[in-house]
Length: 373
Ligand SMILES: Cc1ncc(COP(=O)(O)O)c(C=O)c1O
Image 1: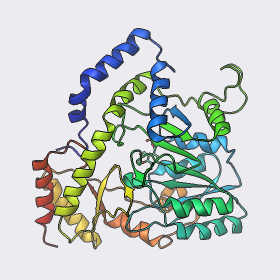
Image 2: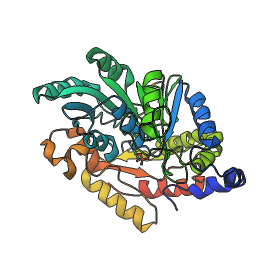
Image 3: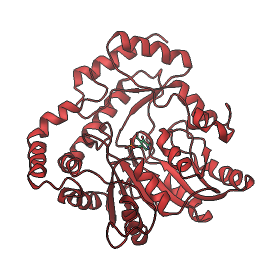
């Protein structure tokens, strides 16, 4: 059994993907070929924003907007303490300081109640708070009504890290529309995953869009040999774009399937486990289906049981960001963000993909429910 089965999807659309790849091999425009612009147009209208800028990874999709905003040494960027390293790494890479916030234990997303304290901490340290990076963890959008309110009040730039969130919604608004700029990842295991690295940036801001397009290719101006700012080699490959066009075409049907699978888990797993909480009018793209145990030992026992039954599982994330060695220099300690720390010790993600067969899912559920805890 696979944690994420990419081959089932490939079987379904392999001919179409092969055709798209062949077209790229025929025209030979491997860098910034027509498929890159076709994908950007399609993503832009899917999400419902004025600009989509494809790029080389979800990490570059975060660093490019921060560069466009000129964020650097002396600046503070507030973010969640429970995410993948890339969310905070991009802040530090630019010489700015990450200031962490705790999460809601129910949704694992940043708790906006902590924003004020983080803001004050930045001021106290002599930093200038410039931005918030919120994360739509495991596919569920963060609590944007409150985050946005705080960002506007303090004139902070809001960057939505929807690396895992593409396809999520709050009411009728799609993920990747909640930030001043929003970003996503096309890493293969993501809800909209390619066959390699890739990412995209979304915004309605014309000026920032122009800057970000320039940063994506070495800070180009009138042409690629006129360089007006520092930039990156941050382009999406034409081949990846060609593949993603076909994957986007079936994405909505896969979202429905992911939701059905999540529903089966939630209604059949024993009430001994805390199951994902989806707030009213929120929709998750179910990048992960994660349960939480009532104590640390239960998780260890469950992992052993799953392993002995050849059922894969993953811990996202074992170490919260504020306790990662790389951020020791920031001076955080155990106890600073109790929810992130407790969830790190008790969370477990189960196999989740649109093509998880009913008999396999029943096997996972029965195995977990058989554990006496
Ligand atoms: C929340 C979050 N942000 C950023 C990234 C970075 O994306 P990529 O791996 O495409 O660089 C990831 C990828 O795992 C992620 O989960």
